[in-house]
Length: 331
Length: 270
Image (cartoon, rainbow over all chains, first blue to last red; front, side):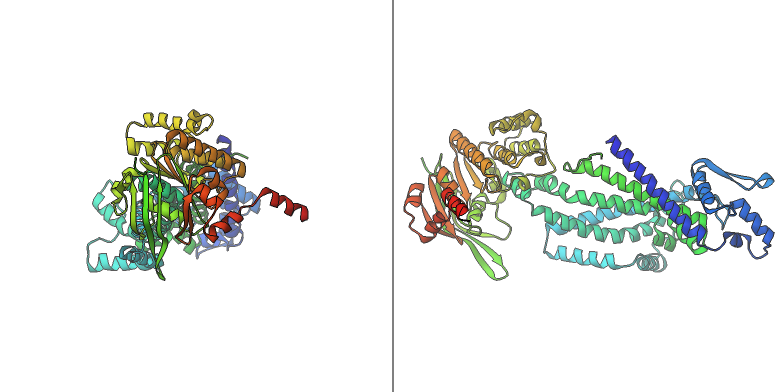
C-alpha cells in the first residue's frame, strides 16, 4: 500500500512536471514578448531590455524554465542590486497585468472556487441521486419519464444560458435575489448565501441531470442482478434488500465519477464564475487568457492539473475501500 | 402425514408485446417430506419459473393461477409480506451461478448472518457463530477464518457450498435447487450433488432439483417431472420415467445423454 502510494505520487510529480513544461513552452516560447506588454505605450528599447533582465527573459529557455520551477519550491529573486525583488517560495511570479503575486492571487481566489464547487456538489448529489433512485424504482412510470425527460433537457442547456436566464428571472424580474456580491460568510451569512445560490444552481443543474441518469441506469442494472434475487429468496425486508444489496453496488461507480468531477471543479468553474462575476480561480483563468497574462495562465493550468491528479489518486484509493474486489498490488 | 408441497394446475402468465404468454401451463406435482423431486427440461421449458412461482419470486407483472400449498397453506395470491416470512425460513433456494448469486460487496459471513437474523433475530455475534457452523457443515475448510472472506475469494465449488450453507441456515422444510451444478466442473458437480443429497437426507427436508441433465436426476430424485415449453410432459417415479418413458420427448432426452463408450468410439473413429 505505502509502496503503491509512493509510486503514484512519483507519477503525479512527473505528470505535473510535464504539464508545467508544455504550458511553459506554449506560453513563453511561442507567445509575443511580454516585455512589450508590460512596458506599455511609452516604451524605449532600454526599458524593454531592463524588463527582460529583471524577469530573466534574456536567459535561454532551459534556464527560464528551471528558474520558474525552482521558484515554486524555494522562491526566487527578480532583478539585481537596487531593483532586486525577492519572491518568497512558493513563488509563481507576478502578474504582468497587475503586478500582484500570483501565489497570493491563487490563495485569495481558491476559497471562492471551493465554495462554488462544494455548494454545487451538495446540491447535485442530493438532487441527482434521489431523482435517479426514484426513477429506477418507478421505472416506466410517468414519474420516471418526466424526470428523465427533464434530465435530458437539463443536461443540454449550456451553463451561460441558464446563468443569464436565472439572473434575468430571479434578480431583474422577480427581484428575489440581489446581484451576486463578494461577501464573506462571517460578514453577512444571508447575503453570502444569496450571492452563491445562483452559481450553485447553475453549476449543479448539468451535473444533477447527468447523475440522475447515471444513478437510474446503475440502480436498474443492479436490481436485475442475480444477487438481488438471492436477497429476496432469503426473505429479507425490501428496505434491507434495497439499502444493503442494491445501493452500494449501484452507487460505488458514482463515487468515482464524483471524485473526478469535483476535483476538476476545484480548478475553477470558468463560465459560471465569469458570468456571475465571482472572483474565483475560474474567472482568474478567463481574465488571464483574455489578457495573455502568462504567469497567471501558468498558475491556473498547474492548479487544475494538480487537482485532477490528486483527485485521481484519491478516487483510486477510496475505490479499494468501496469495492472489496479491487485490491492494490504494487508492481 | 400430508405432503409438504402440493402444486395443482399451476399456470404462470407474462404480459409481453405480443400479448399474454403462458410460460408455465397447468403443472401439477407434489413433494413429500424427506424426498427429492426432479424437474427436467431444456432451457425455456418453464422449470425455473415453476420454482420461482412457488417461492413468490416471479418478476413484476407475472400472473399466476392454480394452487400452491406448503404444509397445507395456500401461497398463491398471498401478500409478499407474508411470503417473506416463509422464504428462507420454510423454503429456500440455491441458484445456477453462485458467483453472481452472492453479493460481491459483502463477506459471505454477513450474507449468511443477515438471513438468519431476518428470521430468527438475535445478535450479530450469535448469527456469526451460526454462520460458521453452517459453513463447517457444508465442508468448507477453516470456516472461522473464511467467514470474513468475500465471494470472489472462493472457487466455484466453494461458492456453491456457501450458497447451500446459506439456504439451509434456517433449516427449511423445502429446498429448491435450480441447476446448482450446471456452472461447475464435472468433478465438483459430483461433490456438490453428494453434499446436497447427504444434507437432505440428514435433515429430512423435501428438495426440488431442477436440471436439464437427466443423468443427474437419475442419481438423486425419487420422482421426476418432465417439462417442455411450459407444459408437463411426464410425471412419475424416477424408475418408471427412466425405464419406460411414455412420451417421445422424454425418450429423446434420455437418448441425448452422452455415454462414455459413445464418446470413446467417436474419438477412435475421428
